[in-house]
Amino acid sequence: MNLDWSAFTPGPAAAGGLLIGAAAVLLMLGAGRIAGISGIVGNLLPPAPGGGWRLAFLLGLCASPWFYQLYAALPPATIEAGPLRLVVAGLLVGLGTRYASGCTSGHGVCGLSRGSRRSLAATALFMGAGFAVVYVLRHVLGA
Image (tube, rainbow, N blue to C red):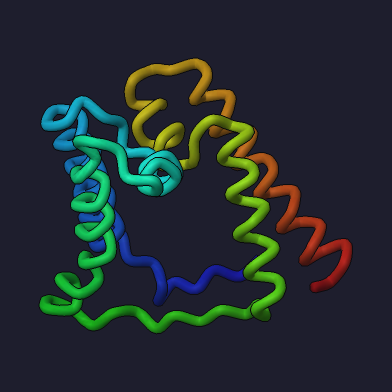
C-alpha cells in the first residue's frame, strides 16, 4: 500500500472535525435533535410542523463548501465509478441506514460521543462492511 503524503492534511481535517462536532452540539443544544443526516433528510418530506430546522441544517451543510472556498481552494473531486455504480451504491447506503436506524453521522459522530452501545455496534458494522466491500472489489474482483 502506498500513501499519498501530499494528501495528508491534518490541519484542515481537524478543523472539519471540530466544525462537525460543533454543529452536532449546537443542534443538540438548540433543537434537542441528533445530527443524523439520513434521519434529517428522510423526515424532510413530507414537511412536518416545526421541521424548519431540518431545512436550515441541510442548507448550511450544502453551503459549507462555498464558505470554505472563500479561504482556500476546494480540493479536486474525482469519482472513479460510473453512474450505475453510484446509483446502486446510494441505494444500498440508503437501505443500510434504514436497517441500522441511522447513518454514520448519527451513530458514528453523535451516538459514539454519547456512549451509545447500539451506535458502537452500528458503527463497527458500517466500518466492517465498508472494509469488506473495498477488499472484495479491489483485491478479489479487481474492479
